[in-house]
Length: 543
Image (cartoon, rainbow, N blue to C red):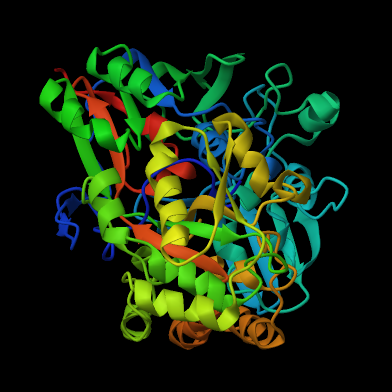
């Protein structure tokens, strides 16, 4: 997913990757990173309501059906429109939401007590049957939910009372309840989804959820307008802006012009090369926040030119990350030793820190890389590397190709339109003929196990079909472990295997970014905006 395309996940387009240390819990407690920027979870709170705000969306969602919402564009929209049983706050803490409480009476049972005052946007009440229907859509193999991995251990979902839902597991799952705070826990109206059929989630079919905004209009290829839901069940979190227009612009130059002229008011992950222009324009402020995201190269085929792990490691060693960070990321990132970021180390940071320090440094070593290629033998076929055609990804594409040339490997670039790139994360057919592809992959919850579940043999996000019985055994043990320290001790074993086998090539991590015109504030600065009702927090500053 990403992303979770993946959210969870793993996502196709854009935000810069991960924070260098654990997040602050409030806007007045910034932290200093090795990337030399101050990080904060929230931007200053908004004070006034506004009639309208225009916000940039880098590409158009292919669908707003939540079971296929696995990337930045659809998640950015749905975070404000649809809600889950639990919720992720800006600091990634998990709290009650549509379920006012939850209990875990035994390791195989989760019971969710539902709020009785929640209505969907059409005014109909949310029922236990709606919750059961919504969760079970992920379990329907015919639908092919991108989030099916979250339900791998679910045995049964039932309405155990008028306002109660019980989930039975086949074996303990340390991630399941956490995932009820993100897309797997989304609740929709059963009657609405059924009535729309295959048109559900499309510009014509729309959605009918419970969030602070509803879909007002979706003009294909141009914009999606969110309209404040006047019947929203939580007055304390009512949206401050009446109409929130998400303007679809994929070209970085066009984005910068729209931001500096005030044509649009804000964006997550503004184009890196234009950030100085944004700051010097005087029209707004750039904020940096922690993130669960890292930039990686996904190995999609373990039978082709990347079959030998020595070739994968050689390419990883040949990369000039420092040059890439300086030229393409403004120096605000650091080389990454593994896929999971520090923001996912919650519960046992000391275990993760020790294991991280024992991993090989992500440092260029061309001679060592050449030696590995000589030992393994250079593959006859070129390595096909897929990347979005958006110009902001050109520096990484060029560096990967140059890294291959340094050590005698041929890298062939395959460019894909930004609005089509997300399909790589949804189905094998779209990835056919591709050996390697780019991702800014994020964890949905602050638990590194949710990243390392990707390489369990049956995981939806195991795109390359990596198979390792020892990995599966450790993963199963970690998933069944409720103690966070003991779980972390198992997860770092998984981390080490992914690094030793180079199942993905970790590249860099850096802060999440958000730019806002001076007239608005209130957005979360972390990448929790992918599940948190970020637009509802934005309002006027009086400027």
